Length: 225
Length: 127
Image (tube, rainbow over all chains, first blue to last red; front, top):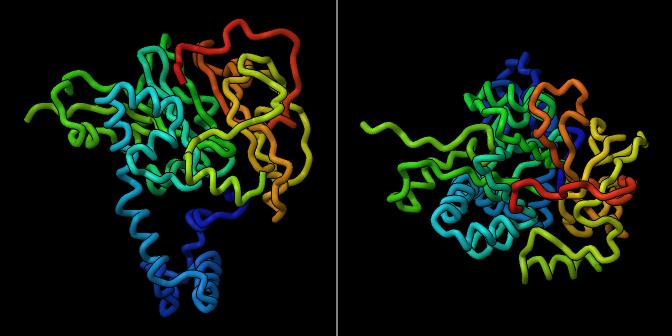
């Protein structure tokens, strides 16, 4: 479900004035300062759930682990598969969640729409209301994705924002912005670059970086060394 | 459909979409987003209220977030659409080319019909 109102990243926006020590939360891993109110609330909630046998600390730890170790690589794998397997790409564009399930990727509650870049259309993803993001496919969203700056500007000056990411699009290309404001989540299927015809699926996945799957950059073939 | 049954179906046949029985609008229909400012948790961005667009796809029926946000069940489920807008219509001083578009998800009760069908419901996009 999409959380609105106050979210954990509210704490990025300042309030690091207090450098008092000795209040480090055991799990949050703060480098400095006191834990935020949200961290204290989250910690208290976890302790209550553990005390009542709803979750174990190990389950929470495991969840955090796959969030960091597995989720961020799923999107690249899925799109690399789409690049080498045209029927799979068609299925992915038709029903993102079903196609991921074919690859053994359970997106849980996430409903995925894959949108394809072509020579005529460039897709770009944002959530103007909060920071909706296909976390089960791409991991946690980057800080810039959650910033007011990106969220506010990308809907009305997408080409300027893209330029700041180094992506300049000619006027004959339609910029198609997707505001993921409700139940759907989005991933971009970028165009496969030239000179990758002989590449393996694994190698293709390496150039499918997070930013290419959000649509702010395009996959690049590294220059020969 | 009960929430438990929805959850079972999700596991058996994972899909992005759900059925939308009795949906009022079809792909290609022109619609206006209601220009209303009720308090509460709304998933209809302010900047799109009062704007006209075209139905791009039907996503299905989903629990109403305006109820879910306050701890209710979100029943009855509401049909969710993706609506496509011309950027120059949404932002009168939009600097980019006229071809640029923006799309978002809007629940049926925020939509009002506009007479006539759009010339082309789809762009070059397959999805």
